[in-house]
Length: 448
Image 1 (cartoon, rainbow, N blue to C red):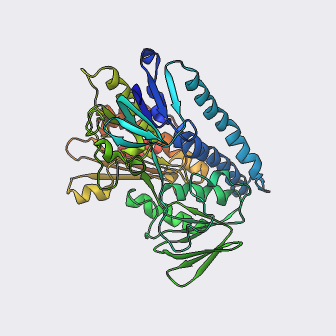
Image 2 (image 1 turned 90 degrees about the vertical axis):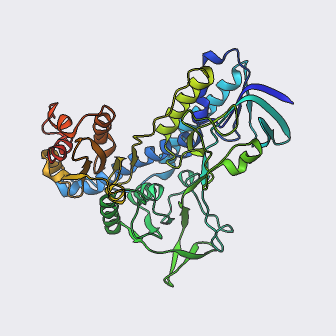
Image 3 (image 1 turned 90 degrees about the horizontal axis):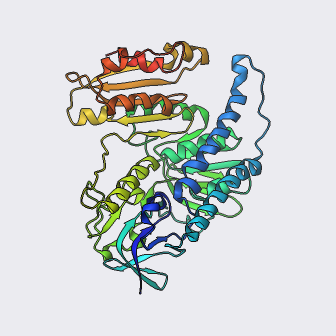
């Protein structure tokens, strides 16, 4: 049996663990797919390249409202797609080539599953290691719908590489993937329908955000909330039978109903590795699993499934592998996220509903983009900032922004929260450029 000092399962954030300090280690990486993981190959990077393209298309369509006589003719989908993956695919290939070139690194291009403690089977090849890091990510959830598995549906793993831009697209789901992909394809000229089983989009977001984005998308495209699909038929097109008795016909179907961790395919229980009720590998504050000498990071451990959390977790694990006597802990007290639909959304900290459920005293301050000079210049009528603060400590408990550049605007609030600044200090302890979009954050802070 082949034995290694360190074995890493997954070449997304897991690939970043290896550095010059491991030159004397016998290291193995197990990755059957493209190097770079979900984010690089089928997630945040290609989707944001698509989002930027969609933003440009939408701007061309809406500029006449401001007196700029632009028009949108059509989207050259093959050119858009090939620009994206013509840049991404070589990076993934180069990452694999580089790792294979290192004399102390073995790359296994196989699927893996545990057969015992510190022992895995790689498609018939048994391998063991002193230390193991699980960074095997997650995969799309495919609901059990009659006829679905027999149809050529897409998930977020495949939709961005389709051959032609569909005339019609139905998206199942109401989460961030659905919101982002609906923006992309609608802006590029596809007739988009979202079918979501909940009343509002983006479960888990602050209700003010959910209400606003649902209202905006209902005006922009065919949004069917509180609706489920009962059956899928496919011949030359898809026929989706809905619970209200209607039938939706579409050219392409995107299933965006969530993602599940890959712990089951790894059969982690055979390795003595515990998971929670949803299948996520459980870890302590040092990112150690229940099995001695096994760590885990990224989407296989964290329901948030965010690249920036996985990167930080990789830094913690990298340190702890080399310094077992002085391990670092992971801090998940502030985990921001963004949704790159249109308009953009960014959030950090608690929602108002969470604070109310916990009976936590809090103050609320909100400001519309339109109340600032730059928001007025853009004639933005939908964007807003909503802040939640502790009435006694005056510390910010949560921040939620919907509107242009929301992920950029929220960063100053994340910095203030991480530094322990009061809302008063954040509002008055610095100068805000006038007229610029950050003034909407300033005004929301001054509202306390």
